[in-house]
Image 1 (cartoon, rainbow, N blue to C red):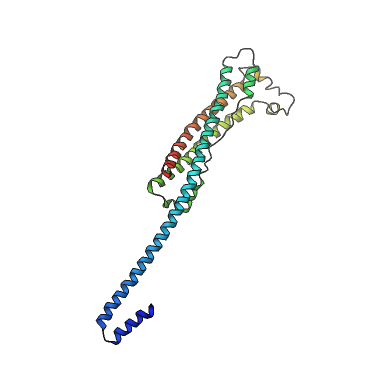
Image 2: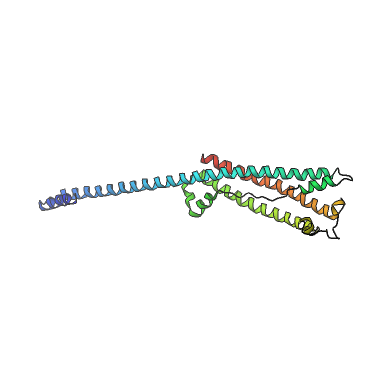
Length: 241
């Protein structure tokens, strides 16, 4: 093909047909430009197709992760509700107990004040932001991803502060009891705190109640924090589906 065009150019020049040669040369340039534009268009189409495939892969992973997050949030809600109920049952009995403390002690032993936090599995959001691939998404989805990420960060920050405050109250209560005896590592309770459970007006009950009340506040606060996460998660998930 190249030899064919070269032959035409030589023929035109040899025949002293310079105007026709200029016209031919212009046409050849146009053909070259058109070829380049077509090549660029094909390349752009290929890049667009690759970007579309990558975006869809991200969306699929993100949908699965967000659904897992919603399941985790539902599980946390159930746990917090059940633990809050054991604490309320304890307080209800404390407020009605008279001389028989056995049931109160039993309910005290049944208390569950474990601390669980929400830990998102939506690692795809981190990848999108750190790699710059967030640009693959349209404006509405991009904003929803950034909003959810910001909510996660706020949730973690306030949850950590609340738990740290609660831990201080727990440590204060433990410092005023005989933990070795409670864990059955000591055969006798220390004289300074001996039989504190039999005295409803003891300092230990007050410290325990402060800790339990703060624990309930933690569960309620986590419920509020997690509801914000749930709302933003559902918003993003709806855009992706």
